[in-house]
Length: 123
Image (cartoon, rainbow, N blue to C red; front, side, top):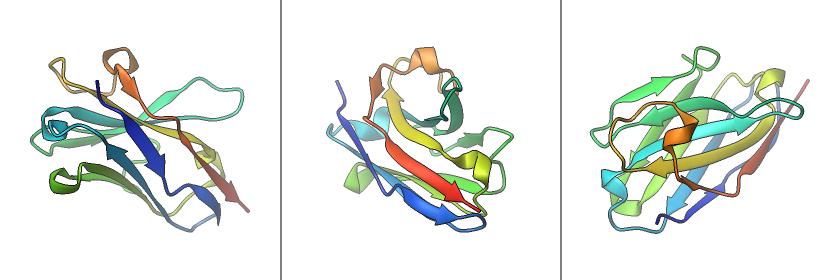
């Protein structure tokens, strides 16, 4: 089981940037599909981005071109660089992991989740 700890959330003005980090506890981190998800108040949790074991990335349409997911296998850390933040990006952000096969942005596949970090975008 992977233990995940997110950090880097906070309050930022619209148009600003934040970088989220997710530290993982397992030395096999590099063999996991890693994802970022978010949940805004009153809304269902949604997928934001994922990165495969080989470094292939994919994004939700709403964040494509503004967010970048990356990882540092040596540091067992996943990142989410968020630029041009919008009010609609306000949410609790979670990182998640699984090593069960196909890597895609499907919540049910991810069995390990962090506690979340809050991102608030103000006008």
